[in-house]
Image (cartoon, rainbow, N blue to C red; front, side, top):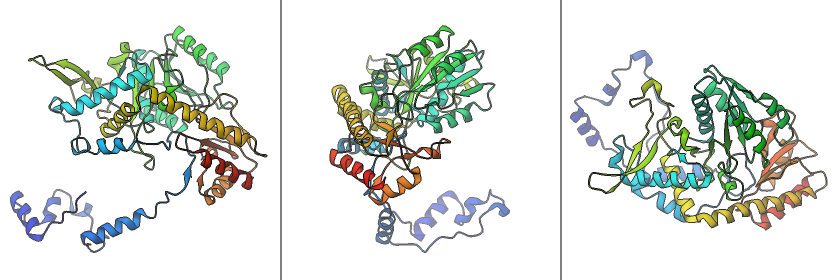
Length: 445
């Protein structure tokens, strides 16, 4: 961003153009008692002093530690071309305008994004992205209710769903006439017996995550069959990278897919920004919120991209809109499109396998460490839970002193998980790093 200071003459010219005497007149509409009386601001700095100040602040960030963190956000390799292309000015400054068809390039990029997401998930329709994985899941729950024509009043949520997402779903549905039933945690997997007993004609949908928050992979075919028997929808959430080797939403006959796209070419930025994925079977497309980009021909027969099925509150639908989410994470979705195009279909499968193989190696090595046990009873993808002979806080702190972000403390999210840590290993982790990680664990425990 360029540093462009305004001189006193510049400010005077601008004030003259808009017809006011001084800058404070810009706030005349605000009552005096509500205006700030002073601002605790430092003296102005020169351009080079500002850059030095920014550099000093940035240097406070510790980027030297090796990350084994997971739980929804992951440290993946991002090809340089993703940055190079996504930061071009025509993309970096673009926002889908309200006269959207004037921006054919942006719409084409989003159309390609939708096409790739449909291929990845096996679903027939998707939108041009949501805000994040949590809001995508909440919107999926509302979709299930609309499909059930509001006659079905229950949403079932598996205990293996990201607990932060569960809170978002509860918040979204809190003021609807709905019952949200969250299953209790039973080991690392789904309590199928309990779940099957809850499925009845009043259930609008069931939300499950595969791999789940503990990293475990399960077979949900029996559950999905039971849901469809009572005309309830199966809502599948997944870690996109896992879909290179695991069954897609189409493969398991899920009705709606949701997930977070951070792992597709986006950085770990203190939890964001990211984007949400929401896709479904074609027969539910009119209940799909947000923006959907379509393709057509103009009057002269030229290919054109358009926004279609805009069931938004800002348009003709008004109070009958499917959602008040009327935007998309355009830039983040663009990065994912570039990432998936660069990796390709075969590359995506290799990427998934690298994640699986790295995590399997690390899990096997840690299981050999005296005092460490693996909590997962089911197969895992690229993260798993370890049980420790000490508190998770003590373990995390000691590993940090050895230059590792060792994992996610589960006692911050669950009761009675004081000695359990969620560990992730992506394709970015080398064998040397994993061996050093195991060596450090041995020294600590």
